[in-house]
Image (cartoon, rainbow, N blue to C red; front, side, top):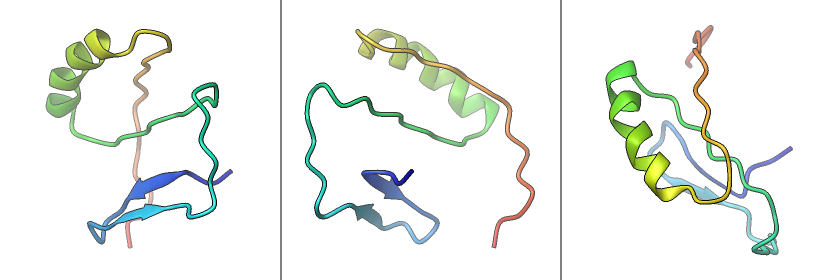
Length: 65
C-alpha cells in the first residue's frame, strides 16, 4: 500500500500524481515523534477528528539510513 502524500527525511513533500481522492476514501495519517511532542498533539487531534480514530503505539527504530 502506498501513501497519497508523505514528508520524509529529505524534508520534501512527496505526492501521488494520479490519485483520485474522494471524501469517502479512508485515510491513515502516521507520525513518529517523541513522547513529549505526541502528548501535546493528542488533545489537538481529539478536538479535530470528528469521525475517525486516533491511536498511539510505541515504535522502536531498527534502522534509519
